[in-house]
Amino acid sequence: DAKTTQPPSMDCAEGRAANLPCNHSTISGNEYVYWYRQIHSQGPQYIIHGLKNNETNEMASLIITEDRKSSTLILPHATLRDTAVYYCIAATGANSKLTFGKGITLSVRP
Amino acid sequence: GAVVSQHPSWVICKSGTSVKIECRSLDFQATTMFWYRQFPKQSLMLMATSNEGSKATYEQGVEKDKFLINHASLTLSTLTVTSAHPEDSSFYICSARGTTGRGEKLFFGSGTQLSVL
Image (cartoon, rainbow over the protein chains, first blue to last red):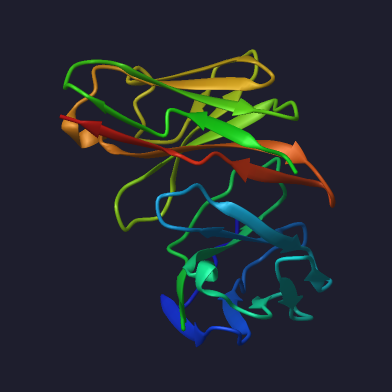
């Protein structure tokens, strides 16, 4: 699976959009971009995934660049409960094992 | 959506005893489950892949005789930490592949905090 690179941390104000970047310059054509988050002392929670088109669900939006070398997870209106570690993972699908990097710690401030 | 139940959520045991952790897929069948371990302030590390009806596949460096995995049904996988020692104290998390909405994805249990005294 391709390696992903994320900044170690970022913060944003409550109610504002949180844009979390991820680089995956070596991603292959059949690898999806998955985003999970982990709130302290809990199991990871699935957020969203995509292959090449932008995706949106009730939790977030995923913007993938045309060359697929990077992506951005957007939480449109961050709340204090969105404070967590967010993991960006490139994998060939749910059949494959997910390899977690260090992720990015998002802190939402009041 | 798909739910993965993990039990117990925390356990404290004496050194030398064995501890069993259960992972259940509640509303879907999971032919494959994954077991992870997470130390404080570190990321999740994959320990093994659990396949229903066959032997588990362990990642390099993980002792298969110490971490026994059984996946006897399509909804249950168990991880047994045998002869636990303080260095085995960690957060153990299971995941299972399920289908909901757009295609398949991995769902995770809530984790088990193991403390070995």
